[in-house]
Amino acid sequence: MGQGQGTGVPGRSRTTVERPPSPGGRTTVRVAVATAVAMLPLAAVLTVGSAAPLTPPLGPCSGPDCPAVWPTPPHNGDFAGRDASITVFTGGNYLVAGRAAEAEGRIVTLGDFEINKSEGGGAFNAGVVGVGSRVVPPNGSDFLTVGGNVTVQPGNSLLIGGSDSKGEAFGNLRYAGTLTGTVSIDPTGQAIKDADAAAPYQSVLTQIEEVSACVAKATATGTVAVTSSEATFTGDGTSAKQVFNVPGNLASPTGGQIGLVFNNVPAGATVVVNMLADNPVINTYTGTGLAGDQTTEMRSRLMWNFPTSTGAQILGSAQFQGSVMAGNPAGTTTITMPGMNGRVYLAGNLVQSGNGGYEIHSYPFDGDLPECEVTPSPSPTSPSPSPTSPTPTPTETTTSPAPTSPSPVTPTSTSPAPTSPTPTPTPTASSAVPTTPTTSPSSSSAAPTSHGPSSHGPSSHGPTGHHPAPGHGGGGGQLPSTGAGNAPVVFGLAGLGLLGLGALAVLAARRRGRHS
Image (tube, rainbow, N blue to C red):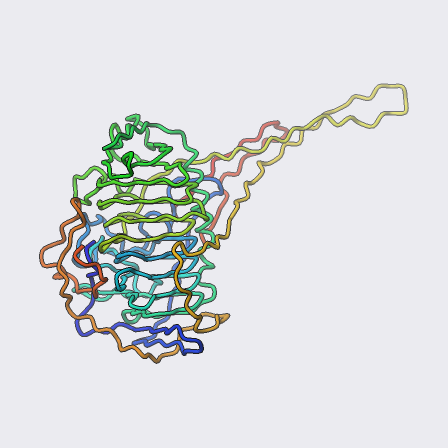
């Protein structure tokens, strides 16, 4: 949560990748130990046009080492478990700007990934963070997958992996385009150039688009009243899925911060907030991450949905609780919060920014989202008269009904090709894309980065920032400074409908995603 502090074992060096943006310059990689990389299977079942529980690699924690209880508040101690599900997904580009410090868990971006921090740059930790849930991806998996180019602007660096007092957390950077700038990877993680890096995740993009659109169609079960100081969500007190539709912003009339309060929401209910404006803003101080805080208790079942927005903003001074989904592949979501505690699933672009050590922390979404029922297209039939008999005897005409199956809904997958939300210098590509995955050859102009103890102390994020454990870094090692200052998804068709012999009606079954 605080600065870019976190893991690292004294005396253990990171793999350092240095990619100078010079034409013809040789791309270099230094790797301590080469390991085989096992791609995590994408096992899920989602019927087109439906929603319900999200299925791994989205939503809940997956893998054998998920924690029984997710740590609250975010902390800097030993790893609490391992999670193979995706924490941050973007169908477009991912830009790290301002003083953003870290993003925890598995990260997948189908577009470009760029670090272009202000005020002289700094380090950005991916996969493992200094303060967070401390639930990290499995060792040897891809901590960061990029379907386009990886660009680390001069003065910035990308750090992947870390450790606690018991051992390492190491993973790979898998990318399809070019790699420019300084990247440090803890052994035995590797930088792997793979032209098909994004291919396994195209269906995940489709799933996010469809689920976001579906959830936005749900009938509201409660009301929202926004004043100059507070937004009050009042539920119906009984529904297991509490749905609130917000046509405007959750901010003061001048755009300032307000509080968020939920009333009459049953314990254990899934809560969906649909932000329906084109450019919606959430600006709040609500959220601490502390046990007993209302939104902390709701976090694993709270979803903020931006189905059609072109420019959404989540701002404020909070440890913001809940997951975020945005279904417009042409949209850009900007997150400027000290802590974003939940999943971030965007069909479009992400800008992670802020004026302090702003971070994304890995926490699962375990809610049961509203479903969309697929209604079959009507197939009217009319009697087909028999040919006229040449004899004067009338011929009886028989109508033969021909029931038809429900017409399957064909998902429309828009392949986003958005440009980076913030124009930045375009680095010169350093190598051609191979047709098969390769590990870049070893040699480097940059010395391996040693991870000794950090001099950075704990920080707090505004009036509602969390309080790190005493002796920050005592349980785990230290990550280098982030320059934060003091602050395939497999689609299945289930129950497609039953046709009775000679029946005139078609029964359309609901289509629902299942956990694998």
